[in-house]
Length: 370
Ligand SMILES: *Cc1c(COP(=O)(O)O)cnc(C)c1O
Image 1 (cartoon, protein in one colour):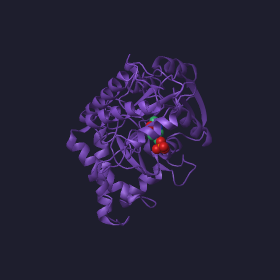
Image 2 (image 1 turned 60 degrees about the vertical axis):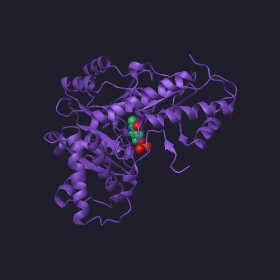
Image 3 (image 1 turned 90 degrees about the vertical axis):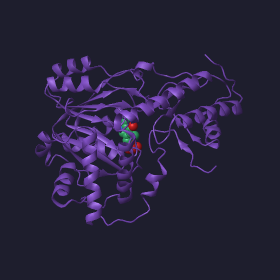
Image 4 (image 1 turned 90 degrees about the horizontal axis):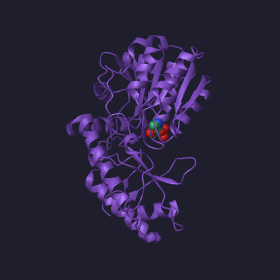
């Protein structure tokens, strides 16, 4: 096969050759040329959420979770009280890291097959005045549910509490407008819907809360306030930047802009998602979520109810045909997941459907159209 395997995963994901080629040079982290790339990436990231007037964006080395952890540590005072809206695995991770950083943490639990409820949130905020901040996962990548960002932000604003959004798997694909949606921090990363390579996250911080964040973080390396102050002063990252990741992201953002920005990216992912769901349903595979709750990012399917099914063998058979699937992340049901994101379109999704069909046949599982 003359192309890399297609990653049908929620990051790392398939990138274009152009993005990969951007990584063929060495850059000095203190050098003006590299600082100009960082500045341009930050400017274009802010434009994507229309946050030029209201927010700053602070990049941070590491995987996406590093930036979620840094956002909580930077924004929430040490005696703050965080309420995590929990409808899946990434919400549980956010609650765990909040606790580990010594912040008081409460959880408002919801089912993992539906969005969190803004009304239940508002009632909880009214009942418990000690809650200072709310954490929302915009697209819960665990099952693939889209959560109601605008309504949650409105409830937090009415109740005068801070909001931290993990928009890791939605940013650049789903619309997020900082002029209309009030958040204190919103977190995303290079290797998701912007179709860069993994290695850095970035956090949008509301200017109005920025100065008040000084000294909150108990971590040196993860202090976004410090990172921001240093970057504003010097144009440089505080500690060694992931230079190749940054230049690849810059090239990925250029392609994002050429494609038509967020609306075009969403349209392509929606088309990918439809092609995938229609194709796998025709093979007899059932999506876990109702279509209204499904974000066009990653789709959870019930595993085939057949004695010959085993995820590991299914995965290997699809991989051999050039497609990398993703295990399920639900606690009680046997499922698998297929991502719709990355530098892929309808053709690749149709090929993925064919590969899944062939993999099932190889396992001896007959197609059972619904
Ligand atoms: C991918 C993702 C993260 C970050 O995961 P990492 O493995 O640390 O990159 C966080 N939250 C959500 C919702 C995600 O989809």
